[in-house]
Image (tube, rainbow, N blue to C red; front, side):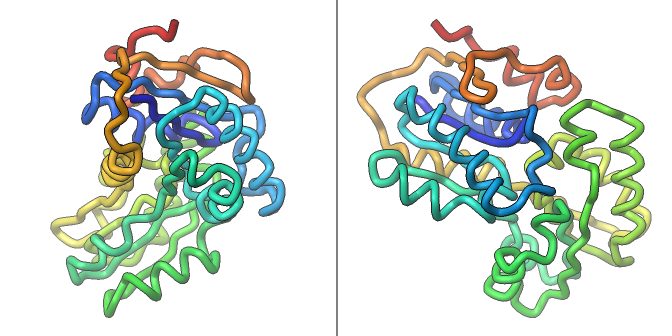
Length: 259
């Protein structure tokens, strides 16, 4: 089995690590374009073109499923990617975990990039899945870029800024950008002083990984747990920054080099 994941940068690590945990034998293809990130400031048309480039490069390696491991790309490019690649290649989007967060009943905060915050896509998810729960959208400018580059000071500053704008008593915090899952512990610690006594964080990696395996089915071919990295369609290696995050360390330690 071969599963491809695409993102602007290393935000795909969380879903890739979850896939590796569920299926250690699966071959993984990580397709990104870090030179173009962050994608948020780009126009929707530009984001779609960047996502198409990453998706086409991954699709050329004939995976059994493709994960859009990026909330911004899921917002702007999902329909285009599915129109081009399905049904031959199942495409799985990353959706903020609003429904399970709201099911707990308490106030919910959604931390996301400025491009996703307030978007019709996210507002639609809130309308359809939040029910009676009070939901606050919190934009986190600069956080994804800081995570991408492993900039501790910038991460702390962006997290502290978002925590200061998170309403008191928040019971559930949705991580609406895949990069944020890499620093979930730091987000929890920063939000704890203003949150409810039992703050829960909700990422998307595990649910996305499970959905990717369901959509891939059970192909005859078996993988060897290899890892292939593409940057703008060219063979590459993971940047050193991935080793700063537990998902990156786990993924690289468990992966066999691609042939």
